[in-house]
Image 1 (cartoon, rainbow, N blue to C red):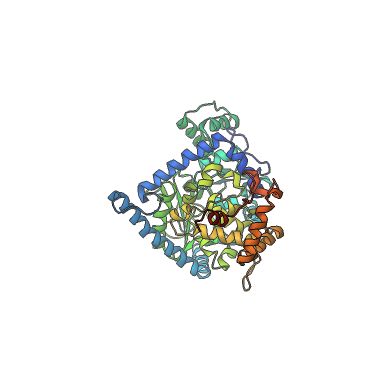
Image 2 (cartoon, rainbow, N blue to C red; image 1 turned 90 degrees about the horizontal axis):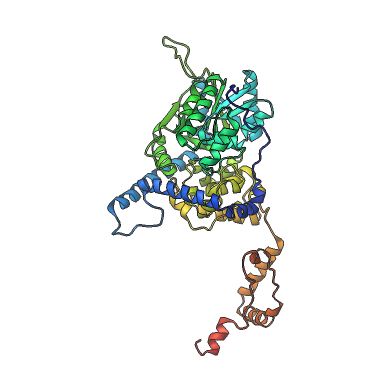
Length: 507
């Protein structure tokens, strides 16, 4: 698959960061002044681009605010209500829509596959590649393929999977995972990219000229489109009524992956389906404006079957074989529980990341998950279980910015609170437990809170406790678990506030 112009891309095992090391990773990220500066400037840029269409995210506008800004906010709220209603309606009919989609796609010659786990999805990719004797694939941007670690699983069988999205190509050369779902290499400087290209692409000199770097990447990738037997893509929306795959992109690599190779394999999550083509339009308007601040993207691909070779006017281009892999991987768990179902409304715009004060300071790699930021903190526990991801729902100040800017009205702060509770407590009667439910349960913490609740429910007990704590404050330990890692120890005052006020004659 690799042309003489390129070295093989990374085939080593993933160096992804384990989400169980999230707290340690955040410290490393916070200590990296360059990383924080890069993300801060990038998030400011993306916020400004979005605000040009929808206004700012900082709460309600004053009545005497600029008219054009008020109009933008009104337009956003109107469109958001429409998008939210479409996503909720689609999810309410999800089983029926998936059956309808399967039937429509099959009738149009698409081979539909269902995968419950990443292992099943990778086995399908491998079987198709082996059937066609393919030693390589060229891939458009697809976060679901990142979710199943497609590149690395295929590499284990000697099959190269080359990223063709420029940002994905850069992080693949670096042996990293995307740090943002829309802009995968947002954490890289042009100097770092120049070094990667000079190191990995033979005949390439170090240059910091951005246009020259882009031209170099495109020249390399063009050979891969020509030679690859299999093209891989994600899907932004599935249309049940027409049996269509809708793909949104800017670089044109998605169209190349889905039309040039003989075989096209698309993969996406089961939640992406909508009933009608007209339902795509509001979601598309919300997606592009929320993601990159564009009114429209350069390309909007609507794929309805492989190349038609029968009839009076056989088609001359397009793949001869089209496969769609529908992945569950924990989505059924979120769908099963009504409280968590809004998680599946996501259209992967990344707006919540762009406005999250935590993400802006630590970047995406610290999370150690495919989907970082606020959306990653509510969806990763379903994909991976709460055990390895129990710290992610706590990576939020609950300022509400993520919920404020979400274009489909996902109540992200409320979902974060529900996951925090689920990580600490057993499932309520009548509810099936989440994977990893109560994995963060701490008996000492639980006993401390129960004791506090008991004291606080009785005025007599509380007064006696406060008085005793004040007299014995000298026994306060200097180390108080996580609290004293960054703060001075808590020490009871010698007198309570009530006693002080009473002593001053102010009660």
